[in-house]
Length: 149
Image: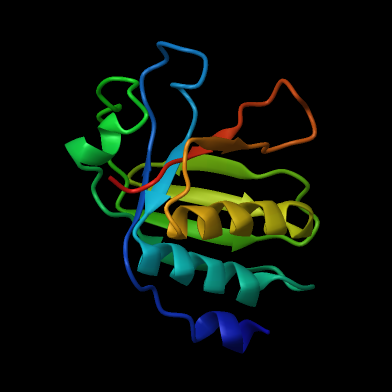
């Protein structure tokens, strides 16, 4: 299992950003990627699913003005993340994202693996403007996925 994860290599670009809290969904995490990037992260998620905890780190591409304007929430926050550690913890019930300096740590488990994978698969084929639940708690903020401009 860990060999398959260790052999994974990133292709394409993934973008992750957020906006200053101005509207209901603006302060949440936002994602997009080019088709190769989305396929690549789907492949990583597929390799991770199972019994053992594992992680890989991928590069986050700088968000362009064209990408940031797709949701129409104004200027994104100035924070800039260079990498994102994608961590699979089998028993993690929620999707979580933490900022640690210029890197992000995305954690997921078996419960939300298919939801996360499906979101990137939809962006790969040009679908966007949808949210995914990060938790069973309806008060928790969702994550938003957008098409590439």
